[in-house]
Each structure stands twice: as structure tokens, then as C-alpha cells.
Image (tube, rainbow, N blue to C red; front, side):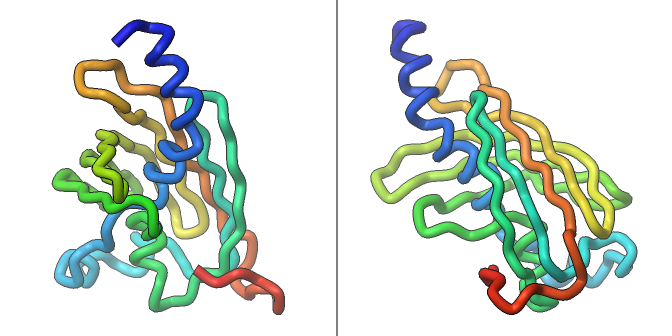
Length: 157
């Protein structure tokens, strides 16, 4: 694939890649979740998160219920992308994810993310590989808990 074609694909796919990065990780298994202390997980509430890939940024806010916090922190589910992370290491304020996301048309994106988290924020940096053998494109996810209570008109996760 020519470099100019790769850049065109990257520019068109950037929003999709950013969404796949944040919106695709599966929830952590229940056994692993119970091994973590409550101080080692993020809290439910009203969250703002920003995804960025190839210079395209998108910010959203969602209300996350206690029953949804594991799915939210591990990665949001999406109708467009089905993601699996065979490498998922979370603990002591650090997280690392490696895997792939596939859309309904069979397009696949390899994903690598790592970073830090606290109860009320997390930041993951890494990249997404749009085509086999091409370099990973920079991507990031930054999230912060705005409040413990959600506004009446909040969109729920």
C-alpha cells in the first residue's frame, strides 16, 4: 500500500479507530474483579472522556451506574466494533491492553494501550494498526469523573 493511501485510510478511519480503542474492551472476568480492592477500581458517577487518534478528538459525557463500572473501565461496548483483548493487565493503578477490534464488515484493527488510572480518572496511550505490517497510529483516551451524582438529563452508559 502506498504511503499516500495509508494516510487517506488513516484520516477517514481516525474517528472509528478512536471509538474502537475506547469502546471495545470486554469486561473483566468476575474472579479478577473480586481480587481487586475497592480503592483499585474506578468509581461510578458522571464521567467525561476524550478519545484522540490521528489528530481527531471526540469528547462525550455518560452516567455510569455501579453495575456498569467494570464494563465502562474495561472498555465500552459498541454496536460497530467487537473487540477482544487477550492481553489485559489491570492493577495497582496501571493498565495494559493488547488485542484487536473487528467491525461487521470484517475490517480488523489491532490495538495497544497502556496507562494509569485512579478512582476518578484514567489516561491510556497507545495506538491502532489499520493494516497488517503498517505502523501503529498514535491514539489516547483520557477520562475523568465529573461528579458522583448524574444530572437529570444525563445519557446513561
